[in-house]
Image (cartoon, rainbow, N blue to C red):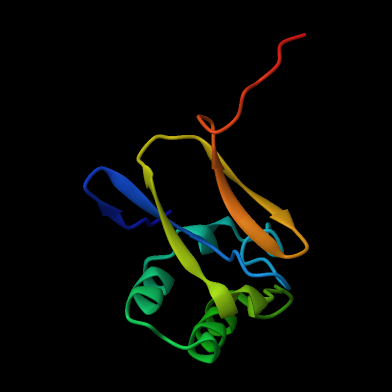
Length: 107
């Protein structure tokens, strides 16, 4: 899977706005979290419509389904390479959670 790397970090795409998640609504397409083309679009200030059009052309083909509604608020979180993380979602609002952000209980 291609990723954008800078200064020991990896670009992770997520959508913190309420409504629709970028990854959490498209978990069958994990590459959308790291896609270098979408990272570039976000960095260049592309509109949500431009990102949605690109995403549909890349991932919604044939029987594959991709809902790009999270493009409205798409942002980049830079995470240290090798850090385990997940993307949490509530009502369409996503947040990136790293393994260092949680205190785990042990049974």
